[in-house]
Amino acid sequence: MNTLSRRTFLHGLGGTAVALPWLESTGRASTLAPGRRMVHFYVPIGVVRRGFFPGEQDDVIPKGNLGNVMRSLGKQEPHFFIRKLEHLTPTLEPLEPIKDKVTLITGMDRPFQPGTDVHAQCASCYLSSARPFAVQGSAWPLDRTLDHIVADHIGQQTPFPTLEFSCNSHQDNKESIYFDNISWYGTGHVAPSIRDPRKMYHRLFSATGVQRFRDVSDLVLEDARALRKKLSASDRHKFSEFFESIRAIELQMERLELMKAELATAGFPEPPTARLPRGDYIRLMGDLMIVALQTGLTRVATFMVGPERWDTPYLFDGLFDQPRSHHQMSHNQTKMIGDLLKVDRFHMQQYAYLLQKMDQIQEPDGSTLLDNTLITYGSGLGDGSTHQYNDLPIIVGGGGRQIKSGHHINMPEATPLANLWLTQAQWMGVPLHEFADSTGTIDITVS
Image (cartoon, rainbow, N blue to C red; front, side, top):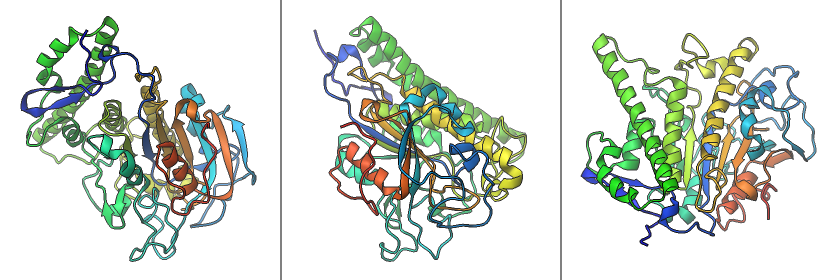
């Protein structure tokens, strides 16, 4: 019996290629662990602490620009503890179906370099965490970010060492690149994120020189028919599911184009939010990221839900009847707390969607894509109204049996965020002993 390579690609007209997911018929189920992946899901402008952090639901809403205070004004238990993650706060409730596969980590801080706007280094320095004033010639502690350091060691195994996704649909680039990117090759050298689903689609599935959109499932149909004859019944079903997921992305692309065409004939300019409903747009970008991870196009990705301090409003479909500015709401938390809590929960729903979808994708050894991925929810601020760089909202999802999931870990005071980044780099197989301002690792892995 002929066996097919795990990395089988189907090629269609014009050079378009699709990498297949694992299929039983490509050979026996592997006893080797699948490659590990790492994703960072970034939420801008912090969170409403009373909705996110356990034990803070009755706290007074903080006021003022606290900057780099040592701890928050909320109730905090000063000592290290690990507890079962049982009763979820309102913002965390979307994680209920999968809470045994996530770990809430509280109490971690990150460096702030005085002399610059608090937002300027909020997202841009999130994954570098360099010590203040350690980077020469920079107004903020921005160094090569974690994703690229990990990719330096494992990126040669995939077509794309890293992929950078952004859900900033705004057309007005009113802020600098430091407000809109969390991935950096180094100080002053951004790894540009892709905002447009079509551009990301072409990057993943189209060969160089293909100028127009092509339906991938049509292009590879001849090869697909030949391959299907060699597959078992269960693999034919899995094969169909995979192509249906690609087709679903294509249909959303067509929907996006139709919306643009209709707006063009209506005689008024396209508003910034008129691409797709906000949730659909984020999930479409998420679907593209999952396909890239599933098929081995990359093992390292960053996913930025929105830009930092961008006052242009979004229409958060289903939440408000008028576009709203997340940043402006965060500065009026006392009056806007109900609306801000809705936004926080909305972002958590998108994160939960990715976790649940990844948990349904089977790997060669019977594990799931989520089991072999660390997908970290986080923000560069502990609270959007006070701009505090300490006590950050962090959730680590996935990791399977290698991670102590289903718990709430409260770290000792002043634990650097870089400790978690060092832990994740080591989990990915990178031989690092320190990272940025780290003082050690975090005990979330199973030895």
